[in-house]
Image 1 (cartoon, rainbow, N blue to C red):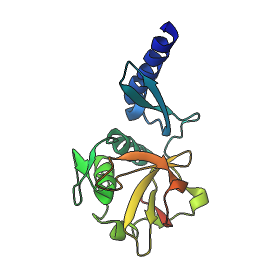
Image 2 (tube, one colour):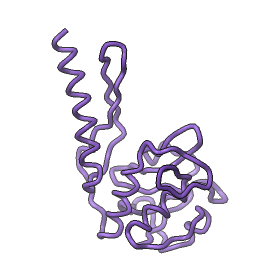
Image 3 (cartoon, rainbow, N blue to C red):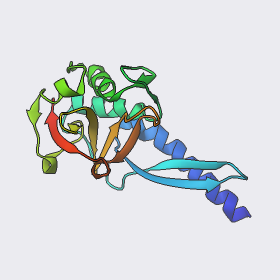
Length: 172
C-alpha cells in the first residue's frame, strides 16, 4: 500500500513539475502517466527526453505561449485568452511574440516560407487537409500543440497521429 501511495505521489509531482517548466521553453511529450489515488485517477504529461529549443526568441515565445494553453477549451472562432480554435491558438501565440499572422488556417498557410516536414523546427506552423482547414504548431520531437475540435481541449499530440498532413510554414 505504501508503494502505491508513493507511486501516486510521484506521478502527481511529475505533473506539477511539468506545469512549472512548460513556460520555460521545454517541449512536452504526450506520454501520459496515470495513478490511482483511491478511486481518483490522475493523469500527467511527462517532459520529452530531449527538449528542443526554438530557432529564435520569437518562435520560442510562440511555442511557450501555445504550450501554456494546453487544457483550454476549443471554441470555434475563439482567439483566447481562455478558449481557442486552431488558428486562434497559433495567431494568439505569435501575437505574444510580437508577430502578426493572419487569423485563419487557410491564410496562415500562405504566410512565411515553406518548410519540408523533415526540416521542421519548434514554432513552425503545420497544416492539414486539402484545402487547408486545420493548423497546429510544431514543438519538436515529432510533436505539435493544437486546438482540434469542440470535444477536446488544446493538447500536445504526435504530428504523425494527425491525418491529412498538407504543408508547413516558418513565419519567423
